[in-house]
Image (cartoon, rainbow, N blue to C red; front, side, top):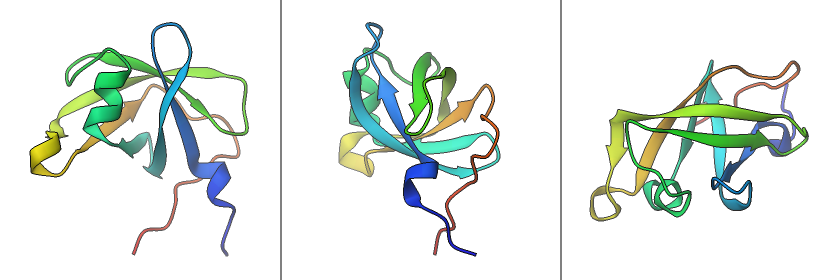
Length: 95
C-alpha cells in the first residue's frame, strides 16, 4: 500500500535548528540526502547532524556515514544513520 512521501521526508538542520535541505527515509534507521546539504549543516562525514521528520516536532540526531559519502563531483549523496525513528514513520519504497 502506498503512503504519502511527506511521512518519509525529513529536514536537515544546521546547528541553529534552521532547515538547510531535505532527506528521505529509505530503510530502518537509514536516510539519504545530498552531501552538499550536510556541508550546509556545517558538518561532514563521520559527524552527527540534526534532522526532523516533516510531520513531527521532534528533532533527532543522525550520524553522517563515511561509507556512504560521495562528494559533489562523485554523485553528491550520503547516508544518515538515525538514532531512532518516531512511531508511524515508514521508509519510502524505492525502485
